[in-house]
Image (spheres, rainbow, N blue to C red):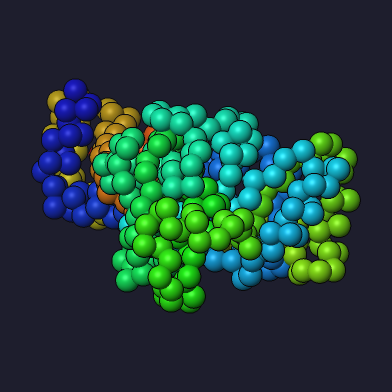
Length: 412
């Protein structure tokens, strides 16, 4: 009976209640979206690479090196010579290395040149190895292995022929069309930038750039794959960066110091976990500011709801008199007012959750392809339930003022 009374009362004031639901919906949406995106971003970044002790690249900022080498965000300031890479890779402290060569793309997706160590030693999340939903790792110069999202979005399958583009734009006028690659493998979905990457051998990267300078083909080489492979030794001159796995964790800081003090080239080695922690520290101030703003917006919306309900108390005096005449107690009316407030907030929460899910669905692809961020639509986490619980409790507290006013009105 209480629910029926509360619902019909809200329907009778549908315009003012609708505006209140809209304002609370916006504030709840902002609160939930900030919390969910923050958690998913941290999870996405943290799960991207696992088991890598150090990442080595040209001297730059630690965050920049981490972002371009692991998350495919941004660009390297310089490259590392192949001879330097070989010298460091053969260090007795090093168990394995994964070379990385970046700079090309395929229909807006990053292309990464690497070698077989990538499929053997690279892992994500809690040291989960890469697996294949179809095909196998590359073996020949012009083999390509696709991330799951690349294959799904572009509709590729094993045996398809693809061409790479010079540079990172989604549209390029410098196509390596004379040196096509054959898709030989598709990696299982990982929820990391691996899904958005085209993987090719380092020799393939070298082959397609035979005779190229500044993004322009200046020679007759590259007429076909065979000519490119015969043109010259396909050992790379430089690479963008490389990941390092050490024989012992004890050697981490000594090897890092050796890289940072390397005299022949300006390089640096970073610890992925430490650099991520630095990134979170930098972002924490902005996170707290956004959270504070969303809480203030929510409080303002709830105060508006309370004000709206208080403004209707005089108009509802006759309604309360009728309820009292048929036997309703003042407590019944207090509970009715609180129930109306809670129902208003629950409707706002339902709409906010629906809008959030639709927003995630429509922006998921864009966020993953442009920024390497994978925002899950699984929003019903413990943090979300706690946030919603806090919203409901705040509603009850704000509902005290109109409830007390209704109590006094019904007693008069």
